[in-house]
Length: 263
Image (cartoon, rainbow, N blue to C red; front, side):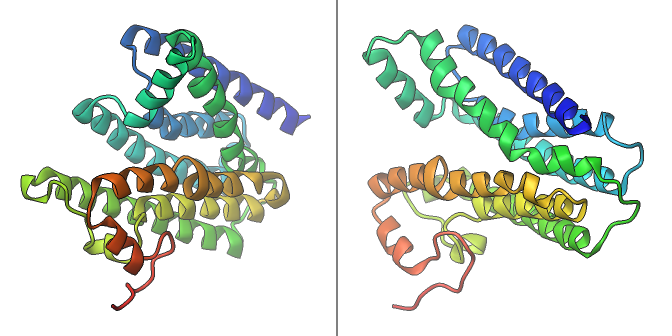
């Protein structure tokens, strides 16, 4: 009953937040801020779960804290990027194609953006929801390993975002490919860091006794990052717009950091 109640409350909170944001998008005629909410919304879910978990549970404190550090940093960065660069080309393309087929902006944005992302966010958040219901009074080895992995992911993603922002800020780099720093070892250090965070949070939830229940979370986010909304959309654009990108692809790992290939 406790699990069902927590999931129900969080599902309602998630749905209400996405509906409110959809209404805001109707005034802005832009949905690009939803990327920031992907991170910030996960912080909200973690916070609601924390308020409904056992007070002072070590697993709850660890999960909520790590999720908040990750989500507030990433959400703030994505909000800043949206304000700096304007509408995201991916969403512009999706909505333009839908409207060309006769959909209104309101219907297309609701069905293809907000209603689609809400259940995905809910599933990804399972480790920070159920892991906080831990009956254990101490953190075990899996929890400590998960905390280390999540912290590594936060650091990796943060450094990758900072390096990319600094690279793009220089006019001399227009049309060029970033292949230094973390980007020398993986074409997507930000996505790799993201995956590390959620697998780390899953290990903490597994230590709390909810490993099987929450496994869909990290599996889904890894699939989204590597095969659907992450790597494929970014690489397709870069291959068309950066002449040197194919050579970069040939020598640089696509996801897991590895030494660059020679030749």
